[in-house]
Length: 137
Length: 402
Image 1: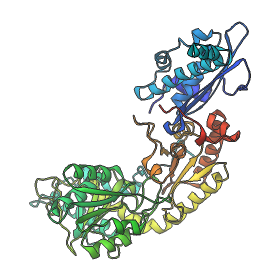
Image 2: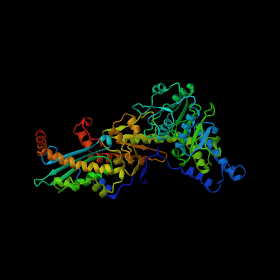
Image 3: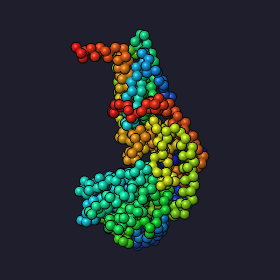
Image 4: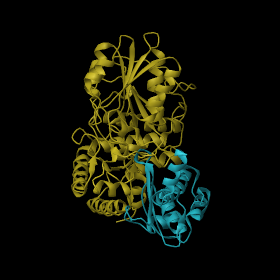
């Protein structure tokens, strides 16, 4: 299969590989996918005092397109607020990387990873409690 | 050393230059139709076809009259299985095969099921080999045909087809063997191997693509129904003008295979062992399939926590294939490795390296070194590797399947 130049670039020089401390209050961690499907993405965001994502890290088990999709979104989320980050759509990722139709699921996974990381951060910072209170009420 | 290095000899082999030389005159000079009986052009072509038939027969120690030319293994398997099933359908409708056969066999069985036959797909053991006991147990009074491959294409293991053929012979069941990966690699003697039908193809033994042969035993005689009708070529089993140059190439490839197999196997086996020795100390590496009952050309390994397709992309200086079918539209890992009972992660992490006549020591060393470096790089990227290193049991994680 022929990969686009952008996929190859991200794959060969992945940006922001690594991990933050999951327990850090400023860090949100999203882990999506499953080994059985051949893709697992872990995306972490570190949120600054101003509520903007100041840094991001990823690790991905998966094909070249999955690695490129996650590498790309670590670049895209930086500097965004949490709400802005969750507006990133898989179609934008697929377009940027010129993913072929059989690789669209990689971009969907990357979108899900952002949402999962944001949700994890919000959960740490009380959103979960509010949810719980709503349920009780 | 020229890059990329070809390590996918089970997918296809280059045409040996000696084979190519043999083919060329039959394209330009001796271009006659071997079925033309009325002039020297036809006679010359027919002579080449019969010479090749003798060489192909000699490779498997068969009578040349039992060789039927086909377009390749897919056609050979279709002709053997559909042809025998349809001929003997009044005797019974049960067929036996096993789960790691090539798709050309499995899909042919599926088609026969649609036509009303009943099929048993045997499981393989953890080493990738079908057990004789399970084979025997699957036989029913109405079983008419069994089809088991000699050598598996993904993991290179050798099935006990010699014993299975004996069993079938004693019970009057037609036995077909797909020996595509075995020819030229495993000694095949059809006086000892009691199969009724056997498929081989040229392009796995340094011959051209587009030509194969089906062995159809005459003593004792097996009957098959033709699948392609026309001028009645090849004893009526396979009509169509013979491709003289392809056949001449196949014949020469078979002649060379017979002559050089013992030396090739020894040399290639040593290279395979050298390759394995240089990667086996990598952490979490698993050899897929039995290492003893296996052709010397094949190494199929899983590097746990590294996804196969990304590894193949990383090692683009070596041409290998992945057990992972991620390159197709399907997200299923290799059905062969799944049949071995490998976990999904390991099935997704497999790489098949197949060596051949033109593989060198330098190439093997380069491949081993490249694999070591790239596996390490991809593990640095892998969240599964990180979890494994942290001592997390991946089976205890609730994954969100997608």
